[in-house]
Length: 615
Image: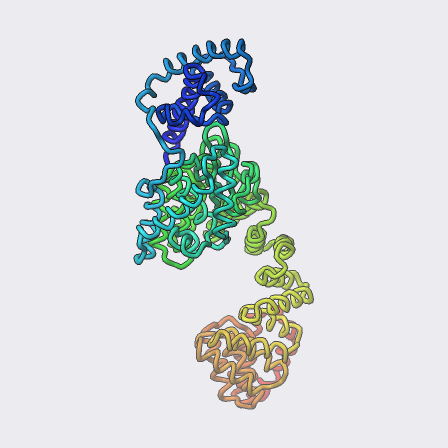
C-alpha cells in the first residue's frame, strides 16, 4: 500500500464525514430526534450515526486546525442535551466552521459519494498478488487465484467481526483475535522457505516474522487500513498508523503492542539514533521495501543451502528495492565471502556499518574477513567492537580468541574461550581451542581436561583425538596415545603425521615391529622425509638389520646433509659392518657439524680406538 494515498484518503473521509454531521446539526436539526428515519429520507452521503457525532466534531476540529482556523468546538457536549441557546449559538459556530472547511476543502466536493466503510476487492490487493508471484518462483504449482480466494475469505471473516467498528484499537484487537485465536495462525522462528511464502503460510497457518507480517499486510490492504510493514535488523513487524493513531503490532507475539525502544535497544541488533533519523529502520515501509524483505530472507535461505548465485541475485534485488537496509548489505557481504571476493565483502560490511553503526553482526563479519586475510590487528578490533555492542555474542569471543592464538597470545585466548564457554557450556570448539592454549602454556592437565570435554560433546572431532594423542605421548602414556591416534586414523585415513606419532608411541613402549610398520607407512605416503629415514634406521639397528639401517641413513643424509646425528649413527653402523674407515669419517663430520657436542670427548676416544684398528 502507498502511505501517502491511504493517509490522504483517510483525511478526506474525516472531513467529509464531519461535514455530514455539520449538515445534519445545522440544516436538519429536526431530524436529530429521529435519526434512524432520516436514513431513508436523506441522501446516503449525509448519513452518519448519532453515536459518532462527538468523534466527528473532534476530527473536524483537527482538520480545521490543520487548515489554519483556530476556533474551538464544544467537543465534550452532547448535542441532544444542549439547551436552545447553546444549540443556536453552536449552529452559528458550526455553520461558520462548515463554510470554512468547505471553502478550504473545495477540492473534496467531487468525492462526496456513497462509500462502504470496509471495501473488499481482492483484485486490488497488489501486495498479495505480488508476493504470490514471488512465491511461485519457488512453488510453480501455486494457484494464485485460489490463494487470493483464501485470503479474501479471511478478510470477509474479519470484516464481519468488525461490523461498523472505527476505533483503531478495536480494529487491531479484532484482527488479532481472528488470526491468532480463531484461525490459529502460529509464529515460528525458523527461516525456511515455507515460513516466508504467503501460499504456504495460508496452507499451514505457520509463518515466521516475514510470513505473518506479509499475511497481516495483505489483509490490511484488502480492508484499506493504514497498516504498514516496519523493519529492524533481522526482523519485520507491522504498524497501524493513520497519522493520529500509531501502534506497533508484533506478529511474533500474536499482535502484541511493542514500543520502538524494544527494537532499538535489542542486544546485537541495536539501532543507532542516526539510522532511525536517516530512515533506515523503524519507519513505515513502502510496498517495495516490504517486498525487499521477502527477497532478502529468501537470499539468506538460498545462501545456507549453498545456492550462492541465486542468493546473490535475490539480495541484489532486495538492495534495489530497499537501499538503506544494513542487514541486506551485511548478508551480501557474507555471500561475497563465500565467493572468495573479499574486497567486495569488506565494501558491503563497510556500507552496513555506515547505515547502522550499532549493528554488531557487520563488525563480526568484517573481522572474520580480516582474520582470513591474516590482518589480525583489524580482526581483533572488529571482534572487540562486536562484543561491546553485543556482550552475549559467543562467536565474537570465540573468533577473537582464535585471533589471539594466531599472534601467540595464549593467555588472552584462554580468557576469550572461557567467556565463550560461559555463554555456551556446550560449545565444543571453544573447549578445543582453550585446550590447545593450555597445552602451549605448559598446563597439560587443564589441556587434557578440555580435550576430554571436547570429545564428550563432539565424539567425531578427529583433530582433538590427534591433539590428545600427542599430549598422551609427551606424557609417555603410550597406550592412551596409540588408542587416540588409531581413532584419528579411522576418521582421517592415510594421514602421514598420525602414522608418525603412532610409530613413535609404539617405539616408546618397546613394540619395535609395530613401530617399524608405521614408519614404513609414513615413508610410503611421504618418501622425502629425511628425519623419518633417520629414525627408521635407528630401529633397524636395534633389530640388527645393519645393511638396511645403512641405506636409511644414506637416504636421510642425501635428503638433508646437515643432521649431525645421522652421521653419528651411520658411523656406528659402518663400525658394526666393519667399515671402520667410513666410520671415522662420519664421526669427524659429526664433530664438525656439532662443535659443542656434549659427548665430544667420548667420540674423540672412539675415533682413536677405531683408527688403531686401521694401522
